[in-house]
Length: 301
Length: 235
Image (cartoon, rainbow over all chains, first blue to last red; front, side):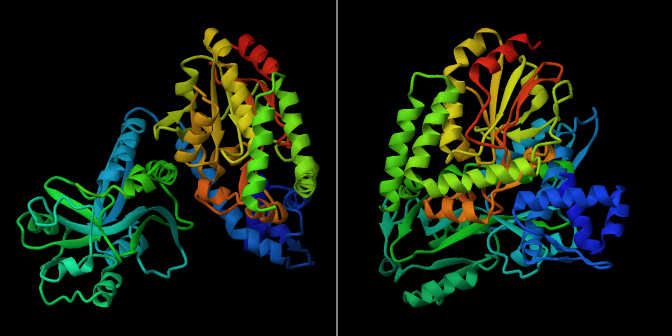
């Protein structure tokens, strides 16, 4: 691990003497460590020159991976450190409005067990708001569909794919069917969530299949959408992986080959508090059962 | 030969070697011989990797016998967060790092540990395996070997890295593994192609390391007899 720390110092200072000072080691010790890393990686990482050293192509290519590994190792160390009694573990998370909390409840339960001092702050927002929360440091971690952000410090790790499907109320004429076609929707009113991250992609799909927005109701939250659905105001096309099924029927919509990729987002290089680092690992390791192919094909009520 | 044909042949060889009535070292060696016969280029690339790791003293500063085993908090195959101290509360433990569910030598190793489980449990000793795989794949490795012990997910090799046990597999092997139809990046949830040196640590209830086996050649693992002896004498 110290090999990597030394290499990261050289990549920042581009000067072996300065890097050695920064790491509090002698320059020969630093050089030996980098030599060992080069042997392990099977090539030179640095082009050594008298004053300035440069990263080789291999060095450039390995840098992001080594930096990430180093940060992960620091986080692993921190997370494992035993916590003193009564110590608080703050955690701020943002989730977009349309992502259900249900699938994440088991991880939060584990977190609360592992950190009795857990103090969770859960924010909701649109994709843009969630991205802003991350940028400003209001939250340490976010869970959302595609954010459409090109910020280079935004680290994205895909968690699961949620297939889109049709949802109708339990008393709807289509209720109980395994699947439906776009032509079945010709006379239906659509419920559209204006806060949905993939609203444009979905609109394009609807238009391509002759479903126009003329007969529609607009809502701003998933909760409202489902309430109106149950009250028979219309039907909706939404990601159905994690939707609650009480009084609602979900079914596959033929010709609709659209999935929403739900990801966990963090900001590269920013310090992650202990509970955040643990949640990050839990989310990355988790088995999203509802996303398995067998369950995906059984989408009826 | 197509990818699937090769995969099937390899799996048949693997099952034959795994099911040999022989010590772990012989079963691993039998599969290493099969692999070298079936795919000499891959075996040569592994030899080169092992050479590089040995030359760079990979694992050289990993914790030693007599030192405390660094703490961890890792998700297990059921998605529960597990601390090393929780495991030690139940008795001395053998902690076995493995490459992952896709690694045949790791499957033989986990199978051998599972076969030794009755003897280990009878003496109130325990086993846990650690892989950089996500839960679903950790579970697969566990069921494949019918292992009764937990398989922990060390995402991004974070814990292995703190022990100086994580390494980059190298561009050549990366290409070969992908062209063999295997993809550790899917099971690991990252494409950084890091793996742990498959080390085994025997840890007493006081958290002190009683024995360890660190070998950059992933075709060699701590022998079950040695592991049992070290576990027995640990308190």
